[in-house]
Length: 108
Length: 119
Image: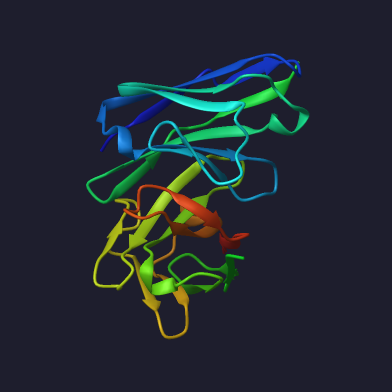
């Protein structure tokens, strides 16, 4: 099973700042199979990115994804108030999914 | 609009059984794989299961394999999760979600159903 490790656990930033979230896999992940989700308290997850760098429908272009192999990054270019949330990476392989443990982006 | 509505969440004793349902609308249900993902209180997301669009194949996390069964009724646009031999650690909000083509991720999620396993 591929284990995904996200860092940092918590990111304290101010609105307007740039956020860089990391997701590291224990084995190589196909680039087609890495996704990112956003979750706010009391809400279901929301798909942000899939295939590493493809934005899901309705996702603003301040969100971008990059990486390959075992190291992936989600970047939020300028944080808006609604971006403070928990972010999860997810990989698909051998008909199984795994999620990272999440990164909380909080207001500094 | 795509809508997913889970039902069936409840309080159940350890060792008991429960069946969750997920009613889907707004898309051609049989064309898409569907997934179940759960979230224990205050914890992260944990993948539970995926079922193909036809229902011919389903896959499970090791933590639920042999105890949980995913099925679907494409004539009624409904997804099911049969949970047997429930344990305290199965306590979670269970989300159903529509998969993208290739089942690589889920683009629409239900609001979740709370399952509490406790005596």
